[in-house]
Length: 306
Image (cartoon, rainbow, N blue to C red; front, side, top):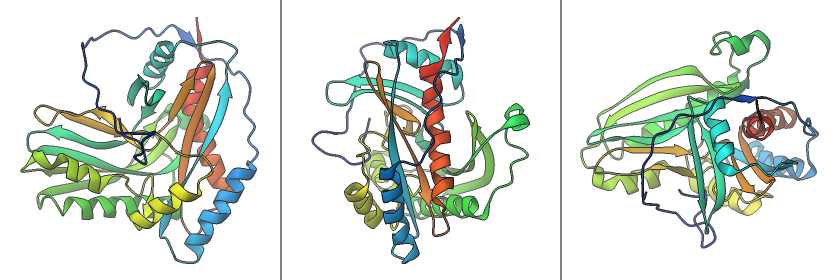
């Protein structure tokens, strides 16, 4: 489990399993509407958006990701393991993880974004960017009728180009497919798949350092946008937009970017979401995108046992 920015308070955590168990997930849940969150743009987000967007208008950055945190409460003290089961039931095609340590606190994530996975010499990663919310009849499909805006297409292409440049430093044997529309909960994204041969998997750490953070959670140029984000976002990201998963170079590795996640503190939940900004981004649209992404974790809190 790795944070967005490594620090003494948010270190990289390596956890060795004492046991591995496979269980069936109980599907006896129903959704409850609960309280509708306040959709008004917060003052902190408005300040951050103006600050971040000005860097794009001036040409300092090509793209930058702006994240925010929303606090939710529940009248019930829901056990974290139950929240994990709810997420597994709601999002069977995502990577679901619940991690609780003294250093990190308790985190639940349901993410669709692969950072790096594979074994031996066969590996893959993805470029996932661009976001649209499915509504009405669209919820019955996989996003086949979605028409992507120029902004979303450009955002995804930036990430795909970045990954290509990263892979070229480690291998000449890679292949890109896409982009294609993929569904994640009630959202769809543009995704390109990269498969590649890694002759020496002893350098996975170097590859991870090169890939992360991708422009999907940071920006371009990488170093400058990373520094700007860590010094200017109102709320520190902590383990949001870092990565987590199973790491075993001798066997199989499955690492995912920590998106759609929340920090659990009793019946208080700190939900995180972000969106990629380009020069033509609009504040209202970007806020709405983060609201749609926050809904992934809000559903886990609102769902009830039957």
